[in-house]
Image (cartoon, rainbow, N blue to C red; front, side):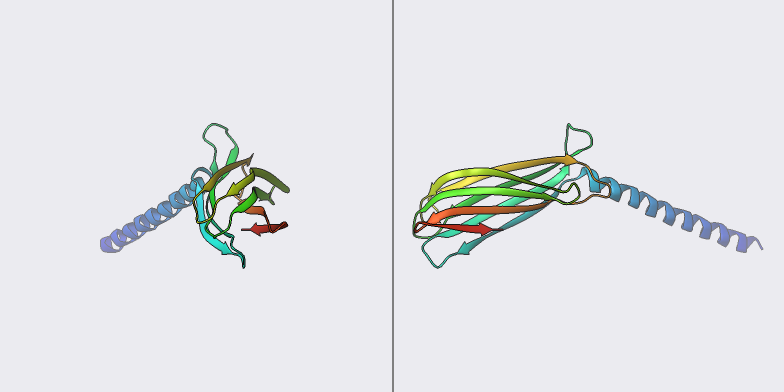
Length: 160
C-alpha cells in the first residue's frame, strides 16, 4: 500500500510541474508579444525593360515603445538605389502604414524629387515611424513602400 501512495504522490508532482511550466510559458509568451520587437526584412530589385533598375532593402520593426506606456511603434528603415544604366529622375518614396485594427491608413512621404545616378553610384536612405495604441490581442500593421519616378516623360510606380 505504501508503494502505491508514493507512486501517486510522484504522479501528482509531475502533473503539477508540467502544468506550472505550461502556465509560465503562456504568461511569458503573451508578455513577449507586447514587449519584444517583431522585425521583418525584405530586399530585391525590380527590373524594368528600360535602363532603370530599382534595388531596395527594407527593415521593418514593430513593438512597444520605450517611453510611451500603452503605445506601439512601427518603424521602417530602407535604402533605394538605381542599379540600371540610365539616370533615375524625380524619385519619390512613400511609406504606407495600413492599420486595420484602428481603421487607419497613414501615408508618409520620406523622399521627394531625388535623382539617382546609374550603376548604384548613389543610394538614398529613409526612415518612417507610425505610433499607435496597443491592441489586445496584438495585431500587425501592414507596411507598403511606394516608389515613383519619371522615365521618358512618363510617371512610373513600384509598390512593394
